[in-house]
Every structure is written in structure tokens, then in C-alpha cells.
Image 1 (cartoon, rainbow, N blue to C red):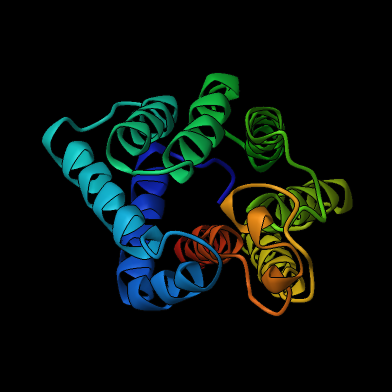
Image 2: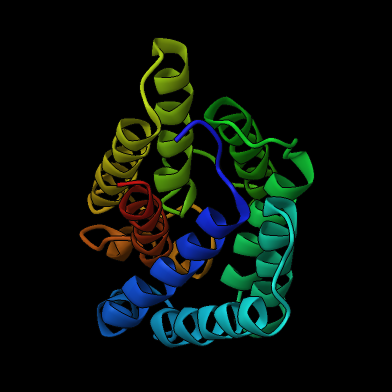
Length: 208
């Protein structure tokens, strides 16, 4: 797989929607501990709208897939996660150049993560989705540097995201609603990081 085409990106969001639907209750339970108890249901609804939009108005380019998905998530996902995820995908889409190579996607994804950090005013260690997506972006960049193939690169990114999500458990939240809990936020996995890890898992699955 030398280039990532439109069908690949559509399949990515379809798989992400499937994984979020599968884990909807787990994500909501995580959010119940330190948030509003709606992350799973909101994200499931948003991704259902994404897949519906991609089916009804088939995109012609990877850029259109990402920007359309980002816009749908902003419109349909309640709370902060809609705008945050939307910023990742819209910025990444704007940064893509055709044909989309692994290196090109890695660079665009990094721009999406930077947009997320800017919008959420969050950094590594704040107990947010950044703790999953930033390590995933770094893993992709290292894979490109090392000349790793697409499948292994995305598997490495997915592992980094999963490990990053798990690493939020002992953290005290410094951003978002969870930060209001202070030390009581310790001991709980961040729901945004957990769902971000699912997006990266979906990417690795589609690439395999």
C-alpha cells in the first residue's frame, strides 16, 4: 500500500464507528466517573452521522473525507469532544496533499494534533485525548523516519495511543470537567483518550 486513497479513509471512519458503538457503554462509564456520563453515546451518535454523510454524499478525495467527518463531528457530538475531534480531522484534511503517502498523512495528522492542543489548550500529562493522540502522532513520525511499512506504522501508532490512554489512569486531570475533581480524578482512564485510542485501532485494522 504505497498510497492511501479515498476508500481507505472512508473505511477508517466506518471502522471507528463500529469500535465506538461496541465500546459505547465503556466510554460512557469512564465519563461517568470524571465527566458528564455522555461521551460514549455522543461519540456514537456523531460517528453514525459521519458514516451516513459519507454514504449519502460520497467524497471524491481523502481531503473531503476528513473535512466532512470533522464538520459532522462538530455538528453532532455534544460537549467539548465534538469540536476537539472536529479540529483534528479538519486540520489534517486541510494539510493533506495528493497522492496521500504515509509520510504525507503523518505530517497532516501531526498538524491535526497541534490544532487539538491549541484549541483545547492541553498538553501531554493533562489527562485528555492529547495523551493518546500525541504519542500516536510521534509513533507515526518515527515509523516514517525508519522506513516502516504502512501496516506496521499504523499498528505502532495504535499501540502508542492505547498505552497513552492507559497512562492517564494515575494522572490528575488538569483540563476539562475532570479537572474540577482534583485528586478524585486520579485512578480513572480519561474517556477522550480511550476513544482516541479506538480511532487509532481502527486505522491499524483498516491498514491490515
